[in-house]
Length: 157
Figure 1 (tube, rainbow, N blue to C red):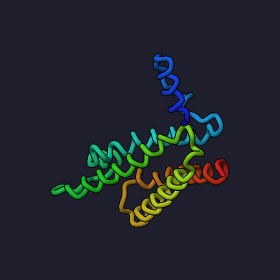
Figure 2 (cartoon, rainbow, N blue to C red; figure 1 turned 120 degrees about the horizontal axis):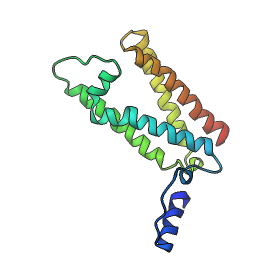
Figure 3 (cartoon, rainbow, N blue to C red; figure 1 turned 30 degrees about the vertical axis):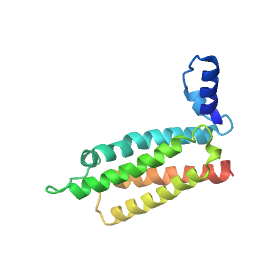
């Protein structure tokens, strides 16, 4: 049933709830894969998914964008859509932190998302249509994508 299921099952038997710790969340067999998922999901949740979902224009200003004045409904809509998709991927991924081998396709998904984001950011940089911080993100996505695919194909098989 996995690490979390065992924790709840043992808590029900003894009727003494046990606190979930980071140790319970990290796979003993694949700790690097678990830590990668834990750190990357936390980072992307706090820096991208929640801010885009809840306050897309403020997030844009933080990253150096100067939102066009006037009707911003479409901008807010697309920002929230992207934040919602990111949140869905993160929430799905979090379930497999204790057992990263249980869903190796998640690492492929992370890799493909990063490939797409590198393409988007390179295109924006070539057109000089984005702030410098967005261009710098290209390296973040490239690094995360390479690590995700390395874990998937070298570590998890």
